[in-house]
Length: 270
Figure 1 (tube, one colour):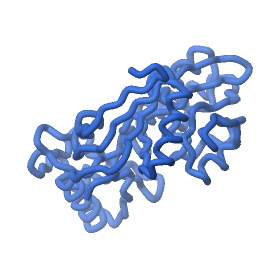
Figure 2: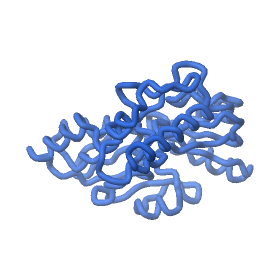
Figure 3: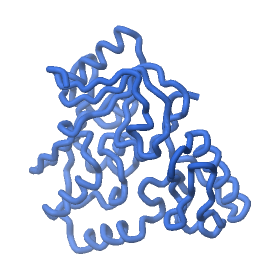
């Protein structure tokens, strides 16, 4: 790690860092452990006209098989601190399940809609609904510094979010029941699902009724217990995953008349 808190690997295979274990090599894999290091990466990449691609935990990210130009950036664990209080200040790299559990332990709710989100808080803030009523402010990298702004502005400008201030209401008995139910049923969209559904039906039930359990394409498998996922059992490529996902979407349309949507962020390569 450098003095300003950067871990850098050149010509790094993304398959080593993402859950589905696919992806070609990127020019630089960078983990930022400090705000100073993060601002340096953003500043120097802008000057060099290098693209920067931020990823969270990667639970909804699949890296394509070709080469990836520029920097692929991840925030380190040090930027995932949880500070409870009158308002909760949470680092962007904090896993959502860790935040939900910490809030539950302090009898704080409001996070029931995110009970089964598997990724980081920063990624969920960018991608998921249900945060607006909880968020007081976010901090993001803007003009080479960490600045406080609104969630709407951070989303609109596609900035790198570093932390968020949340107002979490007291968790009452009804909230505890909602939280337990969301964890148990994982409906309508289970954690890490590669599909979204257009209405309030269970994506797991749709896929099971479409006879899509244990389907395999080379090293990529649809598991019987959780057909909303794709699993690489060894040697599978991003192209295999994409083809298998498209086949599942097509079969759900033909068998159930339901149009599943792609929930994956496909990055880089070809």
